[in-house]
Length: 267
Image 1 (cartoon, rainbow, N blue to C red):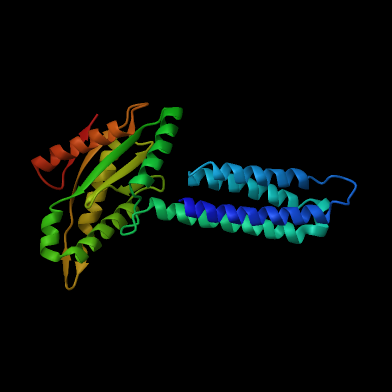
Image 2 (image 1 turned 90 degrees about the vertical axis):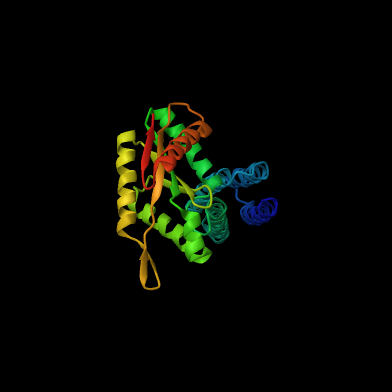
């Protein structure tokens, strides 16, 4: 992260140089057009970026810088130096896009396309805060593919990887846009369902199981069925994330002991 941040700070430095060039071009004008303030803000953004490792915070800082640059561009008083302002705007936008791509890479499981644990933790903190603020329900579903070790013994790791990706694909296509799926272990996944009651979470999980049953994994000339067991917990207001994850895992353990392709719910 330090090397990446150093690169981004170098790009910010280039943006500052463009701002300084613009400042020199118009320095002889009698009336202030705000370029001094803009240049000082760019210095402040550089300091803020240097002091954080949070990609979300860096992206938010660049969002503000981009808005201020756009406002400067549309000012009639800088029409003679709009080329410099436009280049600065493009530099900030490119930098922001690169950081968003990096954030996606850091928070995503590269095999399945689901969030990884870091991405899920960030999402759970955000959704839990929103649920607490608005007193909304938030459910968590702990998912484990049934007999996955036996599956690997029969079909091998390559087909096993395809099975994991297939499961995530079916889950994503079955969920709502606001729902979140993350990979926690080899065959372990967690689904976050914002603004969802236990009853609705159970219905959604049942639908996932049915959709997966209807869409077996195709391998060579045969269809391979995949099933999963699930434990569901609804988060209490202000409950710590480790607590609700633990309760969902315990519900999953109960159903794994009692059978396969089942759902267990805990209050």
